[in-house]
Image (cartoon, rainbow, N blue to C red; front, side, top):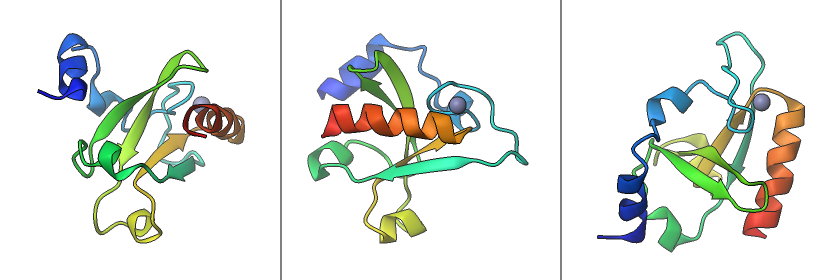
Length: 108
Ligand SMILES: [Zn+2]
């Protein structure tokens, strides 16, 4: 069993469905008519192959001390064609900037 699967077993409180309409940074619910912001990233292939396309995965940001919801893009999505593997949805520009900084600290 992989480390990721062990971690997932230990943390049953991670519910992907509840993150589908929430800000990855502040967890505020994003309503359909609200302007949404998104950040997309590329992952190392070995990190990416664990995740099912279209799934929502927890990403622990040690430097920020929080877990954010990372959405794995599907094979036929525009993001994937642009070379991205995952994206985060945000409620505001402020949240997008904070996540961007945390991601840079975490992923380099
Ligand atoms: Zn937010």
